[in-house]
Amino acid sequence: MLAPDRPGPEDAMGLMSTVSAEVDETVRDEATAVLAERGLTVSDAIRIVLERLAADRSFANDLVPI
Image (tube, rainbow, N blue to C red; front, side, top):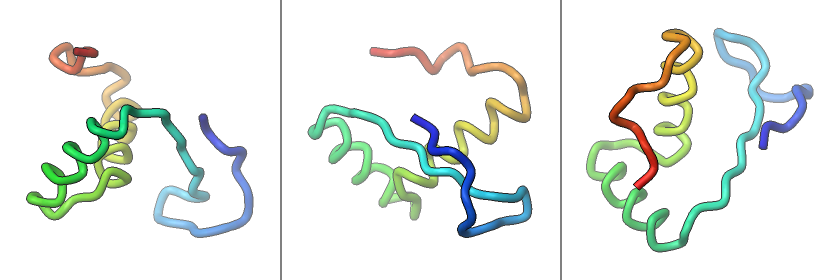
């Protein structure tokens, strides 16, 4: 769920919003570990996916639910 834009941290693109998702705890923990090995957080990964989606106006075909 996207929180409405509100005063807070800003970056080069403008106001930041908070995104919340419900994910199986085991999946979250495993994904967190994989991302940490690459120096990334779950927030980084979500931000990267959303930025690519917005920039490309499409979703990678290989990113499908398993």
